[in-house]
Length: 340
Ligand code: DP6
Image (cartoon, rainbow, N blue to C red; front, side, top):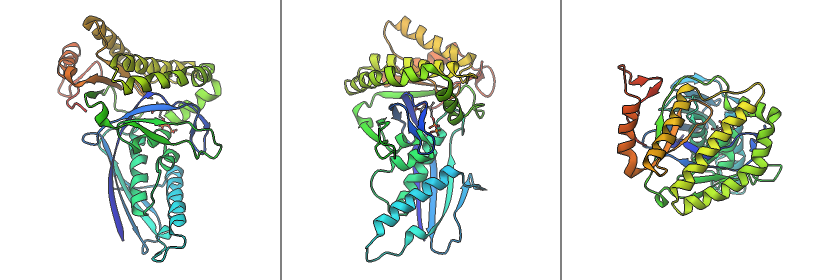
């Protein structure tokens, strides 16, 4: 039996992925860029056991047996295909590509609340499977088959998911732009507004946007290519102000696309909008851009800032949104206890 345990981090997109050109292969209509968090605080954890004695594949989520979704099955199938290609002609070929797998997964943060849990989950699953089945080379394209954004969690630091042009998806992979050490002062603060499961999942939300939003077409062809180049430059030059402005504009455009979708997909709530206002006021008072917000398919805010500003920002957030009950929730905002 082979046993492997892996941890994988969450990634937060600053240029958003929203819309597929191929639903099956999960091929996006535009490039996206993200920052991968460290695994210290928010992570997915997966243990994979493979054995010639297992009769069938099994999946346990938080120790409860759960059904293998088609996406998990696709990832397993692809890993076994790669394993079998690797083993061809090898002497000590034990045929491990045919061994069944028992998979145990969990994550230490809310699932499906717009906190990128699927990105960490599938990245972790695929990394653990690849290690167990001894598969080498790029795994981002396999993680992509689980959940598009997961391909970016395969790498640390700042990461780009190239949309690619090939019909078979072979060039739709993630690559690292720079490691985390390139910009060590960057911090991400997550304000949990609501940790309930979201009403419209990203998969169906973006599908509806592709079908109905003209703004999305304009975004993919005319806005993202230029923004991608600008933010890459800002990241390389440690230019926080440009980085922050593009991040906020891209988040705003994602949610404009969601409203342009018919029927609209509404992810941000009143508290989310209060956070947007707070960030702009804070930057105005400071006379420079100290904070940037970004929202995925949910009401929770991710704030980008620099280490030197963390203490003051956290103190200000606590003042502006003082905790009024034992759960620290005020107007729906949970004051962060951990700085990522
Ligand atoms: C808003 O990767 O969850 O977080 O590929 O259908 O699984 P599927 O969607 P998913 O979408 C994430 C969308 C987003 C933006 C982003 O992470 O780039």
